[in-house]
Length: 246
Image (cartoon, rainbow, N blue to C red):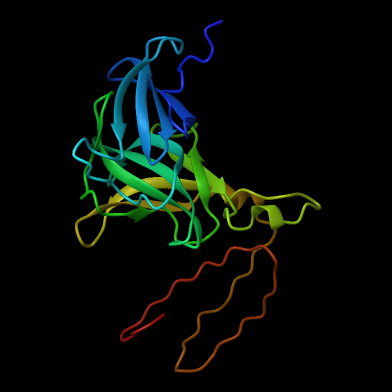
């Protein structure tokens, strides 16, 4: 009885809800894909939902971020800026569907403030921030209440692109997910707050072997190392006095 809990308001795309508990407003919040925008609802009980706001296109027609294709699979969460728990910003991530401009699909994000009802973009509307410049990271989703560290945010994405998912091999499996990544907000050298990502530390638990190589110096020549592998991590510390490209 009572399904669906939110009727489609007449949108061609009305899907991919992300739901979480918002402590400050003491309400459940849902952000849902609505074509080239996302819409926010809140609820005291997960059954009775009230419309709150839309983000993506302002009332005056101003567009935020990239609108080259449909917005899908939103995710929404707070992160401390530079590790300062007293200075938190909200991150809204979403995927952009197949389009000729990007020659496929991609993932973008926004940084801003959220009062339980409305998300306010901290950057200029025309600024587009991509979560990954590779072709195979889509529909990234994070996990709530990750153990070990309060405020830790871990996510992973679909390793494919809408240009070729149906051509993937089906044996011994079809498709795969990315390595889980831990997310953080940091201020870069230009003074801008940006999303940073790194593989989670737990990846180290599945290492089978480890190889150490002696330090070496390069003087305009190639250097080969005695190593082969199919799946591996490669950690390198490099230092230089005068270098134009690495």
